Length: 143
Image 1 (cartoon, helix red, strand yellow):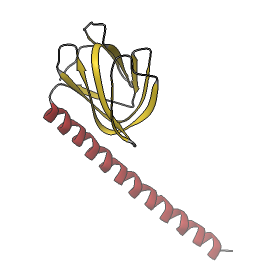
Image 2: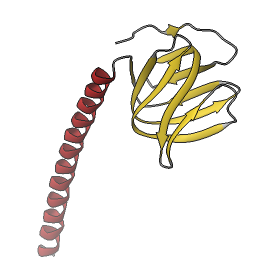
Image 3: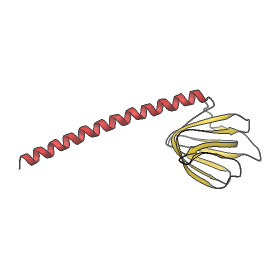
Image 4: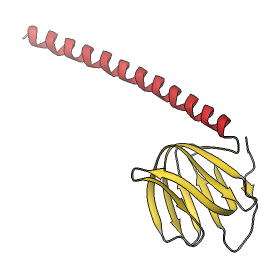
């Protein structure tokens, strides 16, 4: 997995990607292509693209550096904003890696964990609701 905070690159036909979450921020320079997916489908961004703002779906996006290598970004959704050759992605959390299989497994693991946590929250809410209804019934029965 890539852990560096800055990925170098240069070129006239490149742009910068800024990845921002609540716990970390990475800046990637020398990017010449970005591919993502929102509710309208897949799209790509190249240097000089017009201003764009959208919400990315849960899953993988990718970008290609001036070195020709693709890097993948896994995120449980993101807000994307592109202007003046800077692509900003705001996310709760994200992972970045050059290995598709590794990052896909990481994303699937995270989504499974979140689903399990959500199921526990639902279960807890259901118990609270049942207890509240029981207390309301007891109050009504005592009046």
